[in-house]
Length: 375
Image 1 (spheres, rainbow, N blue to C red):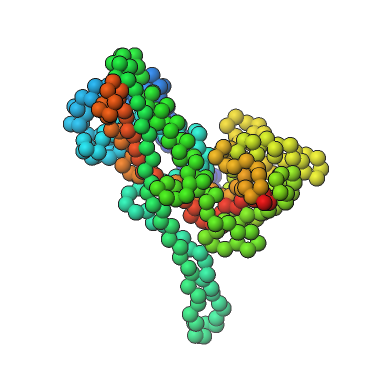
Image 2 (tube, one colour; image 1 turned 120 degrees about the horizontal axis):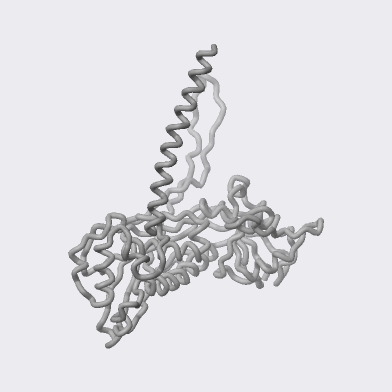
């Protein structure tokens, strides 16, 4: 018995040594990535940002193309993480590190990209079947006949691709200055433009040449909820939000399976009102995050601020609560971002036309609920 126990302990020790060696190896690899500015963490200065990444030849050619229009970039093949196409008619690809920095800006500023499901590298028409339920079953003896049961209904989620673009311009004189940070300027201009446009669409986009936002779907009182519509809970007042109990009602309008991962979505003005609400025992229902990078909470659930959500007002839906990862999808096309350089439209000015494809829409109508202020 002692020998078996000793062997077991030796096996545990050997396993721990292997785990430690593998862990240290992975940690060293991550430290090297961060040290060279990987994962989009580079600085926004020439030499540090973008142009010292994993493909310096392409990055240098991109900088030369942006400044002078030099076409040597067309003979280089972009990294496989973007695409292998180098058709000059379709524009050039944003260098990998610049593309990651743009993604970082969007994620930092767009609540929906943080809380929804985001799928990249999509191509063609995106289709996702979703079961609406309806299947039935029954009890039967071993030798009894089995009768046919009801078949579940399937819903096909098939949003259309939309093209989002930015068209910043800069003088040729400024591009000629060696100290001008072309990459940093493009990040600031295109990142801001895309963030504003996408942020609006994910909340209130009508689905025509743009994603369909959560507030443009048909709604119905939650007690009469039906698939294809978002359920709402009435706020109880014609123009105010003054009853904390309504937020509890909204929270419990969501099924428990979704409520576990529920998130509040509202704008900052609405949050300032909710912060003043108290429960029946005089305690504020809002709680600040006590640890760095942890979210504030309302009734124990995380709060995300998106100023594209409407203010409190008659007939408005200022608050959403739901499991957005199961309820809303954001999709990015495999092609990624492309840039066209236009030195002809206005003499002395260089336009950079940047574009990419994105889609968005509700995938699960059970997973998101809204608070409606009375009309």
